[in-house]
Image 1: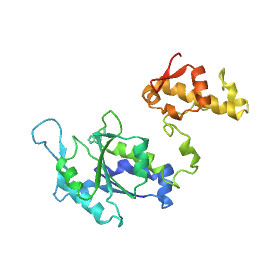
Image 2: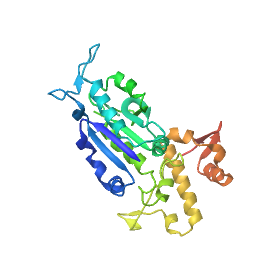
Image 3: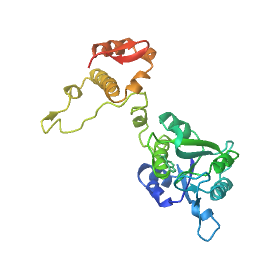
Image 4: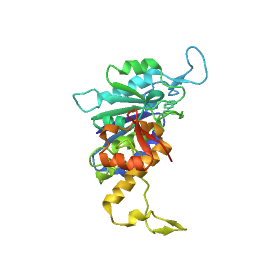
Length: 263
Ligand code: JDN
């Protein structure tokens, strides 16, 4: 997969040299290139921003440096049947989630445009639709100072789904959000630590009992921390045995939705 990132703070993206993503780049699985937006300016002061039309606080990123940078990215893009996808981090974007990470992981070429200040002149975003599939994306309902940190998060979430980036593909399917539930709690040695014991079932060696216990822990955690996710569980996919265990643990299906009846 080819990834281009355009930013006025290319040093922010140095973290992409590290860990699994850095290793994948060294191995040639990921081709990540970071571009300095300022290098696409032509004035003496390398200006990337100006005051907003209509007034208001802050500055807006000028359209022309963005057009120059994105044209350069297109010019050196490997030939491909599809237009590259241009991800534009923005608090006004669609919320990034695991499904979107999988969608992006299937693409050959992702380009990230890191805005700063109050954002990018909307005409540059519109103009880019001729050459890119443009996707305004938000990391969540909070505001960052710019797109760089959002890009670090997205490249990690997407990159680890690409074959050869994460060593053990099994660790991909088991984790939080893969099945719409939060992950069960995990423990390691020692079995007793500061008067706290590992749940005895995990020491039992009974793998069926362990699997059932972990599954119920997932439902309890999800009910406690993410009731929105619990309500989204496909109750038609629950097995008879699962339903029985859930009912015994204080859950029930009400109007087709998994609900906790007692704590
Ligand atoms: O995702 B964000 O919160 C975000 C904030 C800003 C941005 C891009 C993304 N550009 C300027 C602020």
